[in-house]
Picture 1: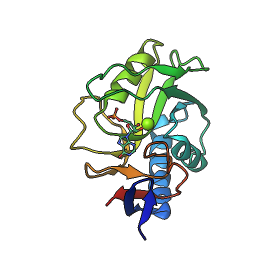
Picture 2: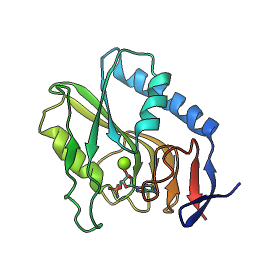
Picture 3: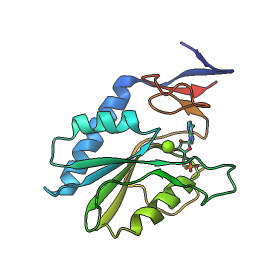
Length: 176
Ligand code: IMP
Ligand code: MG
């Protein structure tokens, strides 16, 4: 069924059970890749709060987790103007970290995040994103774990917002 968020209409796109099934698969894959090591999952707020919560429920290995909050960029051209608002509260030096994003669009946010994390000399940085828009992604940073490759159309729900609204919708909707 169609839904309305502010002035826009959205249609169902990825159901709750599809999301859970995919998160379970990826959690198992990460666990196999980590080979008994203790990774640090770092969720990028606000958008990743639901992804981190559900991904972690499917991950049964030892791990640590934290969150980082970035200011959203102003205008697409100011690519590296992504500022850290809420900082890391965990020492990631020599640790294997997994950055958890809701969606990678142009990849500008990711580039800034990676630069930031590299300053702390982690042992390894892996990138997890629930959604990826391959047509929009222009960067060369490899994405290690991708939930869904989607068309270059705006989506909302499951943590992702349209003008701050719609983050609480439990499934993913696409703009009509
Ligand atoms: P990027 O820096 O262009 O990769 O954009 C990443 C950020 O923009 C994501 O973390 C989201 O917060 C936001 N974003 C990009 N595409 C969408 C979308 O379709 N719906 C909601 N937010 C989006
Ligand atoms: Mg985000």
